[in-house]
Image 1: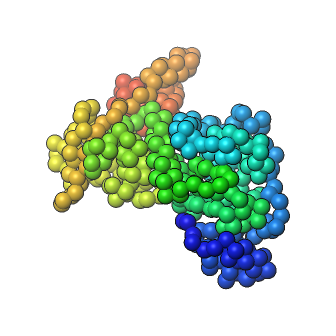
Image 2: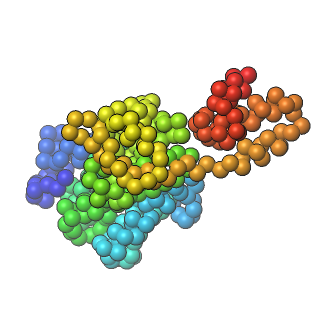
Length: 362
């Protein structure tokens, strides 16, 4: 998203836009045009000082478990990126979907008052500080580069920032990872590394799913076990629960949003019967045909890891109830613990799925 437009031309465009000239935005890439418009609509003026809202909490403990989960997945990647590209006057951070900083690597910001307020627990939205790379990534689901006078606020003219969006298990934008600092960096080099870091972070979200089969797919088997592998989360009954963005692209699935109800039989309809039988079986990577002239290598990474003890505990706790009611209560709790995976719930209870259905309908 780099621009060759001169800095003085951008200064003139900002001044004209402040006076109401929307045509002046034409010097900016389209996502930045949208961000400038959102910033102005929020009441931010180009000449004002950035407003940094108070920290949420003490800046150390994140309140939301989803934020804590995403921060854990991102932190190892931030540390690796920092080792390669960090330095005095620079910071790397992850913001959640609302622009709240949830993880960070930084050093030497005491001499950079513009950047010093960037801390875990601080919200950095367009309504507070105008156009920034993470704000653009969060709004438009695109890699973003904002430098110099591409920023809506004049005060950020010395700042370089570059970001990459992050996606949750449903393919929706859930955050962005960013590098911000005073000076210049090579955007093309950084964007490649930040994209791989984002993919690796998203893949860690899949590792947190305990009650599914986890499958890796790629056209080139050399990319398995790398951030570029596609990942599929599959229920025990063969229903597809989630797919990362690489897998969605490889298999022709919707690029964004929750997946439709799909079985492995449907996803791999072009595979042979023998290949389909191996989909949920442990073993080395094997070739699976998708269609005419199209195939992927698939590897079963692990089976469901759902605990078997939770149901028994609930049954014992309800032992003073009538037998049929005990059975219904155990069925309900098992289905809840398995997050709706009735095949898994029935197996944990040692009953057939038909019997489980009957108990849940009673």
